[in-house]
Length: 206
Image (cartoon, rainbow, N blue to C red; front, side, top):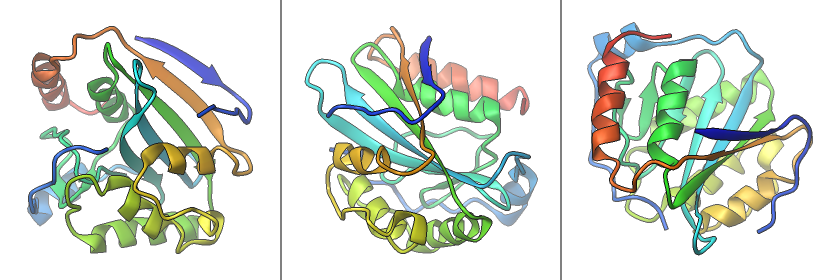
């Protein structure tokens, strides 16, 4: 995997997964997986971009607040070490974040990662809003995400959009945004990779 990282504000030039089933992990699994990261409160937007067409394919969000979660609306990713309730995955350690990104970055897709500093109130409010939303339908990942983000002051100007790339372009204008672009030469058939990542997830949280 090659990682291109911009340590300051970066400018990026300018579809979603299948609809999620209603998944509800038991309380014990969610509590056991909960991970508290010692970094500042933040929101990280992930946008999956096709390397051939330049079109975007998926939107997801990681929130670091009282705990660190991944909002993966209408997503296809799953790992037993990151139990899911509807589209919210818990236990997003640094290793689990890496596993998530590696699942999406492959030969024909790259992942744009945009981390934005926010207040702790916004981070915790977003976690609650994502938890309350319920499962997102097919092709609505950017639309529902943008609708939720714009409820909070740091994202008040977010456009309501069906297109992940448009939301990505908006986030790119925010103060303090830090941008990474992840490329990978994995084969587009990511099922073997998913099986390996699930095995890695079972091996323990790093």
